[in-house]
Image 1 (cartoon, rainbow, N blue to C red):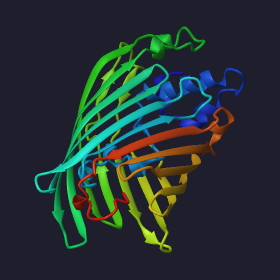
Image 2: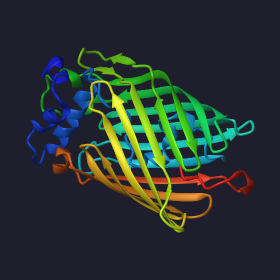
Image 3: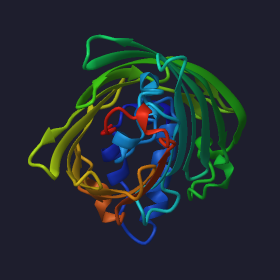
Length: 327
């Protein structure tokens, strides 16, 4: 299969051309790798069901918005049952400084699919303007790099002549920067961002092994509504737009019980339904879990996706926490 044919073939159609048998996991993996290394513009950034608790990774305007030093870690195991399926680990830290008008953050993401490993290291900065007594507008900048490695020669394709797997890529450093805006109050938020503006290109030793990073645009928003004294409703959404790929969006309906337990249901367009929970263990510590059930053709090969999250806020000086942080 040549490069031009791969570029013109939709991803799902390409994957489903393989027979789903005892080798289906390997075939699916090879299909995704081919699309990653064929100059195709597609969605390349990791996806999260807990995007509500991982906002800094996509929007630098969020830095410092929780009012205290905040740490969180997330691990996602996607498409369980498919050999070499994506595994993502994320760590973010951010804090306000200089009279809480500025925020500083740090993001580390390790993302692996089969023989392809990508590590993202980014620093985030935000400046906040008070719009009125109830809302603030933050402007954020993100800068850093992607470290890319791909051991393509280790992939068993069954075709020794396939040019896409005759060379490895290692030690590639891709600098990048992005920006974001985050408008919020205690009860709602809306954010717009593009975390990586540069569309870096890398060519391997063959024409087929060409990577073209695509620019992603994110729109996020959420709201908190009191149902009664003990229950709150928190609908949220995230829309992702990428050149050459369908618009992706997540819809999530969360219910918060007694400010301690959050239960939610999520839908990702054309891909999955999910369930998630978060438990506020102490005023500082929170933990969460999410499960995605596939509704796309991948459900024939995958047992779904799992996501684990843990977060810690250094809010010991309670006078700094003027109100509960719902986002």
